[in-house]
Length: 500
Image (cartoon, rainbow, N blue to C red; front, side, top):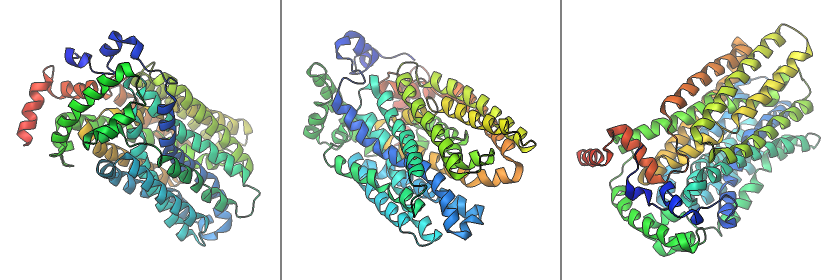
């Protein structure tokens, strides 16, 4: 990609930072931006906690409700109703973000999540529980759109990948905490009610903390609230870089306001470069789910039991180890994503995922025809390897790439659409996994997922660009070049004219 000279002087670009190395930000340099990312990332923790907690709670819900125990469909519905809610939440989340701001969207998500958690904890029957799961899903869906965009828009470009990945760390951390909670409440009366109800606590914490945090500076500039935006970015950048950032965002925001006034939902598909960006972003989200991660996280205790470890508590304990590996792997991903790059990390991750899934499939094939406990342990080891390879790469990369590949005027819409793709894919996988495993066996099911991972590897290799260290404008130029060749600016103007 050829970067114009004017763009090389854009604050945060590689050319700018080469000219002013003293202005480069490091991950731990500014506690304010770290705190902002951590609080926004609590939305990711809610996502992760809900993903993990239902896998353990389901073991005890089956003990309390006979109709759930006797119906795989009801079990899958209890798990997947939250995902159905998340699809709706993500679909409207982009519009909520663009209209009311990232902060208001986060507060709304928290309120909905809290109501859902209370309803789940008090559910007298499986059907009220399902309604509570739907509400929780709505909150998680809105948060899944909001947190990555909020963090990305506040983050300096040179550490944007690492900061957005903290949201993924919160997701995996939430899953780990959920397994700790599952273990802690195994002997407590009303086991699953505590497991599900306690999820309201982080939502309450985020709601309170978010009241004291600012709106995204880019959104404020876009809404012509420059004084508020300047106040925010003055806490992020040193004085030596602050003026350059303000001048750049002021000039850019006026152009974006003019473009955004004419933006409609269907323009995503009429604009060639935005369409290409969404196909990559949406494709990454779909492959993240279809390569099996949330199958493993939702059903890991059940998978461990399928491997021959029947006791609920032992299944939860082994699943806790899997969740711990997921969190540790994400920490590694935070370091690697801004050092090795998004694309290399995703390819390495998928290579390991393919090998792990083949090993997992083989273990279940052997275990189904033999009572040898070795194959049960082999399945658990393969499960751990799968998480070890997935979590540093295909965990954070899709969310990071989706937070940075869309033009400003499309960022909310496309972010919401990509998150919706993620949740629809998640729903398909979680609603079908147990039924397919019952029908053809666990081994063949994981072999199918391995085949999908091979397709995902080819997709990343052929279509995903490297966005490491690029400003939003430099990333936008990638799509212009892919759409129109080496003279993108003229061609883009021609296309814009044809739309109007």
